[in-house]
Image (tube, rainbow, N blue to C red; front, side, top):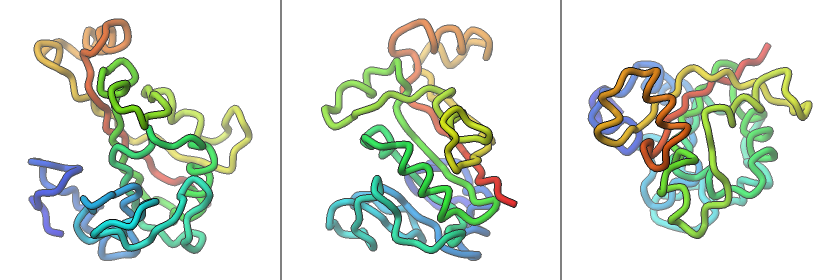
Length: 187
């Protein structure tokens, strides 16, 4: 993949250099890819579909060695996971130190979060705080949140950040989805 490639995570933005480097450095997963696997990645899904390289129930474990994954994508898949905690613990296990995890998911107040009958959870920007260290449940995870972007609907996306945050939290359907970038912090 080259900078400026068109694919479903970065869309019309250039692919950041750390993603290109991760593709050169090691395994990059696309978890829950379906038939729309990211360029240059190992497609992991629960169903046999074109582009899927590894078929597994990723809520029960990922069939990769410890510290072997340079980066991972989860594009509209975590909202389908019943056991997100087990998945995140195992994802942390397979991530190499400094591995980035790129997540897109519907925002909890978006109608996109509710219209798909296979969605079993609703995510906020605070949801990922449970996977840093130390965490409330004593999980063996330490993901640092590097960035969160919100796909706001018009006219809300033109408001200052302070007002966007208030609208996003207290009004219905002003934010469609969020893009979260996590980093695996390991010794």
